[in-house]
Structure formats: C-alpha cells, structure tokens
Image (cartoon, rainbow, N blue to C red; front, side):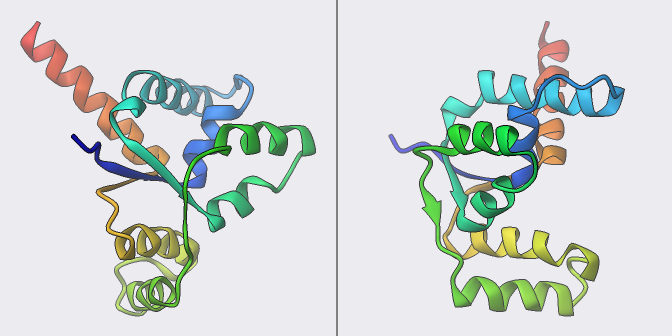
Length: 139
C-alpha cells in the first residue's frame, strides 16, 4: 500500500532541526514538530522542493548544515512553470496574501505534483492537536 505524500515546507524543517528555544512559543512549535516527526512522519512519503532546500540553506552555517542533513534523501519536487503560474493566480485572486507570495509557491508546487498534504508549522500544530483531542475523547 502506498503511503500518502506530504510536502514539507521550510518552517517544519527549521523547527525540526533547531536547538531548543527559550522563547515559549518557538519552543512549543519545536516540540510539536518533533512529536509529529517522531510519531506521524513515517506514515507518509515526505517530499520537499528546491525552494525548501534553498530557503533551508540560508542563515547560520552550522544550522544550515543540520537542515541539509535532515533533508538529505528526501525527494525534491520541481519548481515548474505550472507551479509558478498557479502561485501567481493564488496571489492575484486573493487566496494567498501578496506578502506571502513565497507561501503561494509552496502550495502550488504541492498542488501541481499531486501531493496529498502540505505541512507547515501551523498544520503540524493542528494535526497533532487533533490527534490529542481524539485520544482524549476515546480515553
């Protein structure tokens, strides 16, 4: 049986690989990302794009190397003309705010490649909290 495909956005990669933060919100995002990756990621076929790899390569050199190691071996989806056109339409029609145009490209890359799910940090939070809620209801 084929596992569902998940496109990981850069925020998930960042939270999965950074040192524990003292900032409460950031630490919370890190914790749920680590939990999702440890408990749920094996249920999916994980994908990234060259855009994710590029974004993850920036910043502190040591941190960038950790992110690169995390991404090693993950299949990369192409940033195609069709993805660029779809991203532009998403922004033009107001589905994605102009200030989040790069996020529109992530959404479009996942869509044109037929990926089942796209995971950003907010979606990981929802997915993990939904699991906790269901576990509490059935406990």
